[in-house]
Image (cartoon, rainbow, N blue to C red; front, side):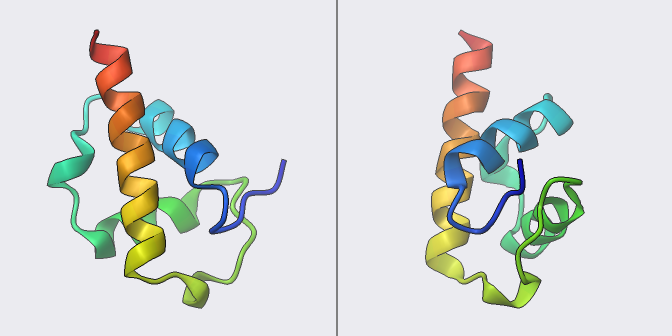
Length: 70
């Protein structure tokens, strides 16, 4: 499944799987952008992200992180 910037929930899941011990709220957006574009399934244009998209992904990742800790 190819991922795009619109797949915040799925990207959040993949980031949690790739970085299970990382608290997403401690990751800078520039670093998160790098981690997202490094995902093998990510196929979108890296330049099409913006703060709103990255916030949505961060919140999805944070939810997955919290769920894994419960």
